[in-house]
Length: 114
Length: 113
Image (cartoon, rainbow over all chains, first blue to last red; front, side, top):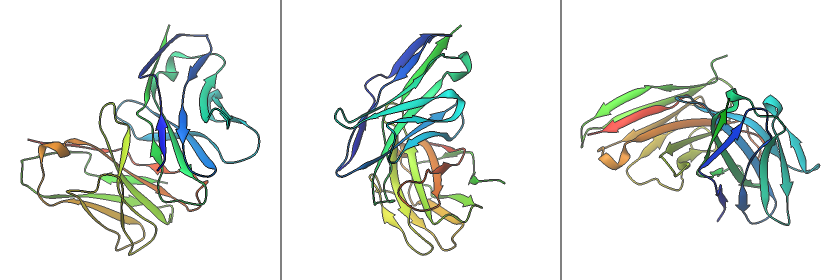
């Protein structure tokens, strides 16, 4: 079985400060890892993914994420937060070689304070 | 390019009624998924399809049925709605290959009273 944990339901950060949204995963074999963002009353939008290669992955809107195999983590980061980054963020994992199941974490609500 | 379109966007059902949610994608994707989103629980997979004419159970399939008669459409049915099925339902599609990302529809907010 595969699982994702997002230990923080809510993250608050001041505008201009760096932000981190945490994610840890459990999967057999090599993981494919994804971050999605959801704005109010909208569907999920893809931000970035890790498949293989460089552990630091860059994505949309200035976000990046660092894959750490030993800690089974894939934390989402941004150097300077914007108020418009306020949204619900989901981490997801899929086992490599299987397109069948994408398992999501419970989500982290990010609020950027002006 | 419409992407993934879900119909309807909102619906209120009485307990015991039936309904069908329609998901249509215009990206020629092989894989399609139905998820439900509940507060504090993230997205949970209900059913999925890896190609036209195929369906499979996900994490929470009870009380739902699906069909994929055409590649571009994936239907989710509730035969006898229950209040526990009050949720936001999302459809997603994916081109293929485990490393590709899924594209999501806007969601259907279903309330069962």
